[in-house]
Amino acid sequence: MRLIDLSQPLYDQAPNCPVHPPVTFKRTADHPAGGWRMEEIAMATHTGSHLDAPLHKIAGGKSISDLPLETFAGPAHLADLRGLAPDTPIGPDLLARALHGRLGGEIVLLATGWGDRRAKTEEWLRHSPFVEPAGARWLVGRGVRGVGIDHYSIGGSGPLNAETHTILLGSGIWVVEELKFPPEVFALPQPVKFWALPMNWPGCSGAFCRPVIEVP
Image 1 (cartoon, rainbow, N blue to C red):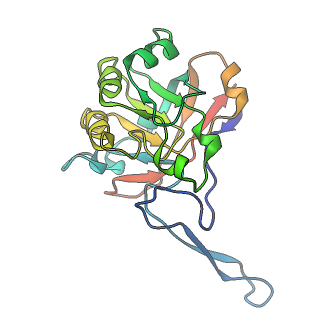
Image 2 (image 1 turned 135 degrees about the horizontal axis):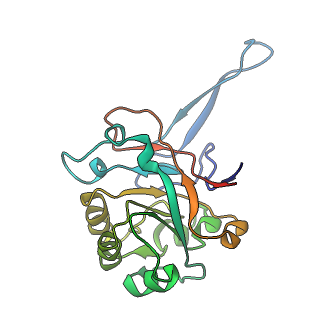
């Protein structure tokens, strides 16, 4: 078995959602004086490659620990949406073309190419492509159980973000954000076997994860 890493690295002052606290890494002990090396980190739970549970947007919704681990692993279809312009809404037509009629209770991974643009720029922070509410309803109607995207927010940073999250999370669909797709994944036969196991954080609205594709 081989694993293809889809995660984004986290480090001091790494790019993240601009309304969240900045990412900080601090070394609190080191060799040789301390005899140990240790780091201290601070950031929001929805930073880097992470999962959104329904509780993130839905009052009284399920937390990350309410969902069984098996929920976050399974067959996934990759939608190749690379080349989208800034602020492009991802709706039913784009999704249907990119997925070629596939789906049925599986996971969908949206590859916009913006995972490769990750940086503290105005474009990346506030002008990414995003799943519009009509696209979110289309995914719900196809029985998707999880959806991922290569940006910090599946709904972008504009006025439709809350509605898109409400549609997906309110339907019990978990979301994985801040992915990065290496070129080799686009040559893999579909569906791929996807894993994104969350940290064991009881009651939290989301958690860091290490998303991978398993290649036999």
